[in-house]
Image (tube, rainbow, N blue to C red; front, side, top):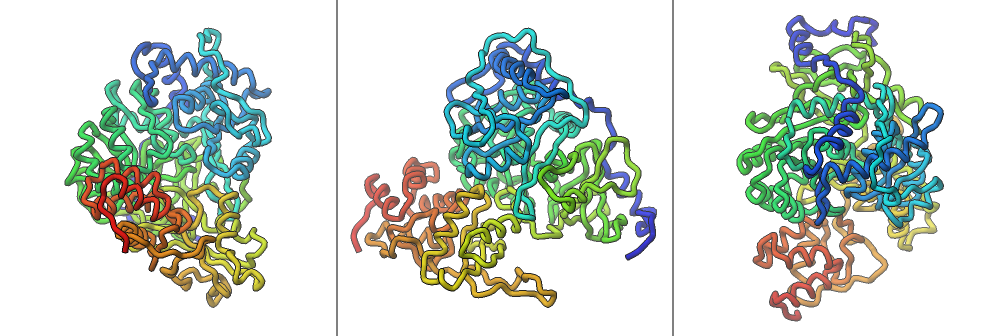
Length: 624
């Protein structure tokens, strides 16, 4: 290892000039800017529509009354320093927006909980996040989390003239959001008001929402992107359009909602953007002017398809949860490049690509991405010392208050002053934009009493979908039983659905490298054999059942599918279901947006049920 302490020693003067000139410029951003602007807009914008949730439209005055009343109650619950963390377990709705805004305006931090996640998972997060109470919407099972339950619907929506929003300092916590942990336990990211204010301030300057804009609130609450979706519209005086739970995974549901409410701004992970384009979303949503893409690498072919089919602007964003959502941006609307860069840093942010000796890499050389800036979080809670070492400062001078985060991502500076993403330096993966640590999944599998060892990896399906597989070594006495089903049931009670594997593969042993570590590259791609569910295999009995079974088998990479097999038991997820719907529409000669396609997708949990729905709707069928 080199002992040269000059971090620029490997860069030529030209390299250094390119790297320093691409960095984000320092700007003064008040840490209470978001809180203050949101509160002012609630007071001053009166009858202007702030939010649409289903059939109800909320004016700024109406939503503001609810936020201020709830904020006054929460402010009174502060400790000696006035700060607490509140877990929030509410589905996407006006109530979720009101709850998060009230927490922020009362000087506290919120901790997102997924309402559909297992109770044990939510309890662990609430406890490790230090939540004083959990905010809920009506009658839910949140009282079982072991902390007081606070129903946001139990607050008087009348005026709260004595409520004055708390002005946070830069390092006050705005959010404690949990991400997957390599040790098997999720870790909480301590996000600050200073970092979040910088992120929203830059976003408004870059993309300039107006009162005529309608922004989709569609991202799962536990995904960091939901942070800007929840606050940016009311910060800018625009309108939020709430996407119902589950609809974010359906291109047809999104197209219907975007069309009815004339949505102008939305976010997509690239895999969902591809399906939305396949459903002709670009043509059918003419009001859309801006699409922000993040969570996965944006492929050049997808960017080109978007440019060809849509007149909206497409921006590729990059950033980890540990740095206030996004830290770089690239306008992919006109510049056709392969690969699509992640661009340049936002304001008050610098991106350094370093080698193993923490020296800046020359232009064109791949190294690890380090983020230095106002948006970097204050660290982790619920993590070990090794994880928190990722926040170790660099030897490069920076403004006061800026922190550093070592991302584990690989990147390269380009000669024209952009950054290209080059994958991960570790085992972290992203499925549908959600971060997953393979070690977390492996630890949960090993907790099953019959499992002696386990390893996880990703693989690509025949249709190009990224999937998770777990390889388990089980005790000899478990062979011959439905151990795969037992492990699945074990995981369902412990992990959120995004972390569940599509396949569980039983192996005699895990392959080791020459250094004695598990070698994931030697794990076989899961076979196309049908999993062994509790129900026996029954072959399709009608022509329609054969067609549907063939479609399921193609999407799920299986040799055969039985008429009574359950889609989810076979490893099907929301993205696979969308692929199935496209193929069913094509096979039956239907438009993708035909009601029958949606009915089969929603109610056809087995091949036989799907075929029955199609036959009852008039699709011709006969027995084999």
